[in-house]
Image 1 (spheres, rainbow, N blue to C red):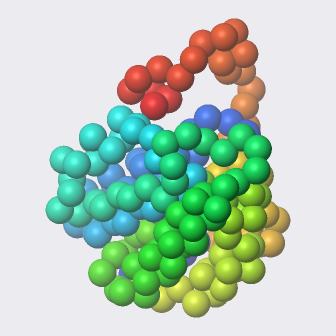
Image 2 (image 1 turned 90 degrees about the vertical axis):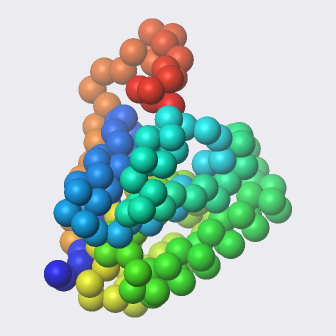
Image 3 (image 1 turned 120 degrees about the vertical axis):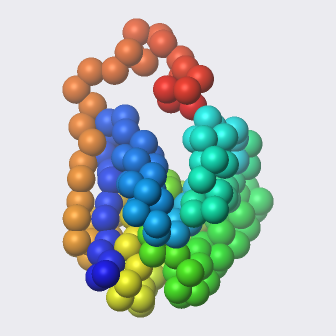
Length: 171
């Protein structure tokens, strides 16, 4: 099967959720899936859910237990760089047919991963590997290199009314 490059971006909710849905679909078809979550180190419910499919879906986080709000630390940089290098090896290994780089655009925005490195990863990906990139404000050069781009647009969100992230829905 030929693999393509998909992007889920935009300011609306659902980018990671869409990627995880694709991971479940792929696993249902017997494909091996690897998910690398950049900038994330906190516990999210999807980590528990995906344990049930650990024979087909692997997930790893490349971040601290807090989100970057100002300037990234040296630790943020090291975690992102190590994670990205690991993702390159995973993509090249041939073991996984679907590889998801969750929140990779945020890693590029904070300059933890250079955009040129992401473009190189896309250019050099094996023919049979599907790659999914997620995150807000995806660089236009990365979107140009992709085969599919979906933009999630926030029309209305209860967060504006003060509703915090809820267990099992947003976290």
